[in-house]
Length: 321
Image (cartoon, rainbow, N blue to C red; front, side, top):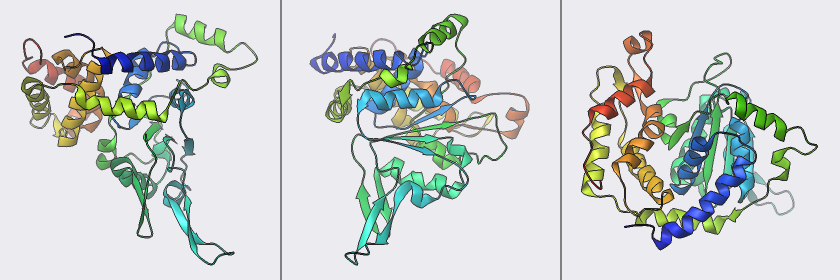
């Protein structure tokens, strides 16, 4: 079965978003694809890499490509939870309590350098990311749709940082690493930044909130067979018994992997999941949910390497998953 009417509607829109973001970000097609998959799956993204490779720029490029409200939170140690979620205060004119929305009350939220703020402020994002709502002084405020949190962090700078706890890491749908550009990509990038206006300044929206919500609703039309679900469950189960892992992937991780595979199929023009979709999405969806044992860390093992070995050890379903 080839492209359905749903995927026929989705692919041109996703292509337009990809092309728009590529005007700013050079040579990071896989990272752009992963970011759009998270958006379609109503997930949140953690962009982790060294300074200066374009983490914040990529998040801002996506925000500018969507006709959605956008807020950036520059996390520092003095940012408080009320700065994120909002607070209530007395209106002097009316004498009534009024809710002052925080920066998170937006459709696209960039949480820049999230590991530079206190654990208390980090945890204020938990309910927001999971429930899509904010509770302040006992009153619940629903966030606008679509809602996407893109957080960035620098993994090599430990001075003045607060590592994200496991519960917070598990809230992120997937993790993206940017990496350095090749010489050719860097030359292309330098050429784009020689003019008077930067590529970001010339970026304009290519789709709106309603179109994104429509794409999100199409995700459930992608068929995932019993074999596909069993393949996901087996991959996740291996992470929970591996001797080099202190903590394996959670049930939230297995749900995220299946949904990411559905989005991958949708972007490929299919209405069914293949084993390749699951394998393709396993690393970005699961690796940040794994915690290595101290012995494995001392030996220089990485979650990505171990997870790749575990995926190879699980038998692949034959035919359509």
